Each structure stands twice: as structure tokens, then as C-alpha cells.
Image (cartoon, rainbow, N blue to C red; front, side, top):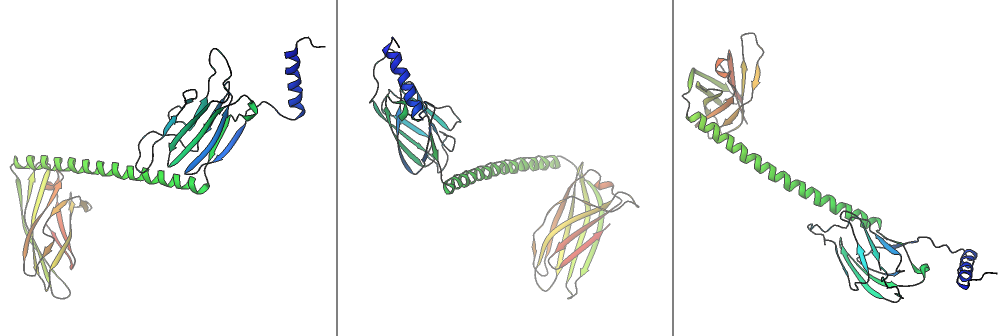
Length: 304
């Protein structure tokens, strides 16, 4: 026979739980997450409840997204959240002096990712009312919407960063171009006479003439001014200019990268002046050069 009534009561409780298949183990409950979600959370003071969300709880302000906010009305209840995580741990620590804490109430308000959650917090004695994990679930449609929204925000961020980098590169290119202009302005050009002209007669009888007088060398940079004359029925549109060169008599012809500047439209009977600029120190010593000007009516080649 047991001599201690309390021990006998505890043993009887264990046998009773075993008989009814009840085990004092952690339990989990799933709650569908909606725009406005309500849930009651019963908590035993010695235990705790973890809220699990299907996304990270982020306080960073993002366009079109409500940042994470949380408020508890009763300081008896505590909430612990680590940055970059998707969980909140709720507790109701018992006072150091002990005593009955059951029946205490509080409200927990959470706003995140467009969802508003109101949880009624309640302290209880019976551990069977306690859920250790409350998992908020999204429908597949809502989950896909969140993924799509995040992808859209990320793409917008990438586009903005690209635009900023592109603008910075343009400024750097302008700075380098100005530096080259300054360099050219301080140099005395080395001129190589050409004085060559080429005529391109089109099938309809129109004629386009290309004339180069000289090649001007400024150290590593060179400029080839040219004149283009249109003896045509209508206007001519210039689409591109290319330069080819041979370093020696038997060397293969290779295209040389250039930048060109010219008025893109020539009226019938007009003459325009343009130029190609080359960043190549060997241009002045090439065995031969060929300038090709392309138009919407055909191309004209000039070799010297």
C-alpha cells in the first residue's frame, strides 16, 4: 500500500492517461492563412508555442509589401523572433514566486506580407489544450502569387541596378572621350596624303561618290575625313562605315574597328563631310586601307 497520497494520485493519473491513449507529447496544429486570420492559442505557463510561417518574417520595407509588425497587449506573454527566420516562439513564464497563472488573456496582432493575424492568447492548466507548433498554411495559388511577386520585385531591382550601372558606364565613356579629345587637341597631326575618289553607279543610274584627301595620325589615334556626294533621284541614308586594312602586301585583309560620325541623310545633289576615328597606332603604316560606306541604295568602296 502506498503511504503518500500525492504519489498515489500521480500514479493513478499516469495509468489513466495510458488507458485512454493520451500521451504528454508535443502537438501540432495547421491553420489556413487568409487575409484576416484568427486563432486561439492556449498556453501552459511552463511550456511554449511556436508559430511557423511559410515565408521569412522580414521587417525590410519593400514596394507593395507590408513589412512585418507585431504587438502583444499583455506583457505576461513574451514573443521571441530571430532575424531572417520564419518562426515566432511564444511563452508565458511563470512568476518566480509561483502561483496560479491560468485564465490570463492577451491579444497578439501580426501583419506580414499582406496577411493580418489576430491571436487570442490564453493561459491554461491542462497541458492537453496546449499546441506546441501552430503552422500557418498557404493555398497553392497564394504561394505562387508570393513567388511571382518576389520575382517581379527582384527583376525590378535588377533593372534599376542595371540602369544605374549603364548610366555610370556612359558617364565614364564620356569622360574617356573628353580625355581623348583633350589629347588630340595637344597633338600635331601626322598627315598621310591619299587624294583618292571612288564612284559607285547604281543599276538605276544613280551615282554615289566617295572622296578621301588624307589620313591624320595623332599618336595611337587616327582620323580619316571623307566626303560623300549623292547624284541620285532621291535622298540617300548612310547606314554604316567600315575600314579594312592590310599590314603587308601578302597579308590578309582584316576589318579594323572604327567609330564614325556623319550626317545620316544626304539630299539629292548634296555633299556631306564625315570621318572615321581609329584607336590603332599602326594605321599610318598600313600597306593598304579600304573605306566602305554603306547606304540604303548600295555601298561605295575606296581603296588606297
